Length: 157
Image (tube, rainbow, N blue to C red; front, side, top):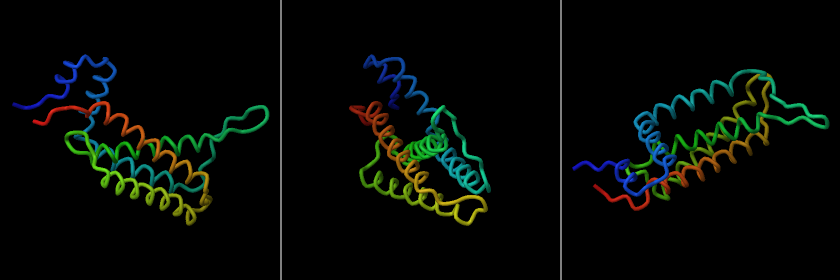
């Protein structure tokens, strides 16, 4: 008998939002590696464009740079897609795999920011790198919370 997580979780009377999240993850999972590859390609392409203007919100006293938020969201999404792509079918990831994937993400963030030195009109910005790393951490925390919500106590097939 094939185990159906959604039916099992409905039996636990989970809130509708958690069931919807599980359905979304079940839909995305088969495509996660392809989405991850496309996301990495998009990051490389955008970070290789010369002289991208900085997005700012001008307030009366100062400017708020939106590119740091974009870096955070970009790398948080990258982290989530990475962990989703490499998690097991039971939505679990070993600590060693988390560590290896996190190190790979950190290396990619450093390489992405460093390669901008050779792009005309672009520079290495330590604040961008920090935003990337905080995004990875945020993606890791989000993934752990999501996986703990949908994976605990699920019986094996």
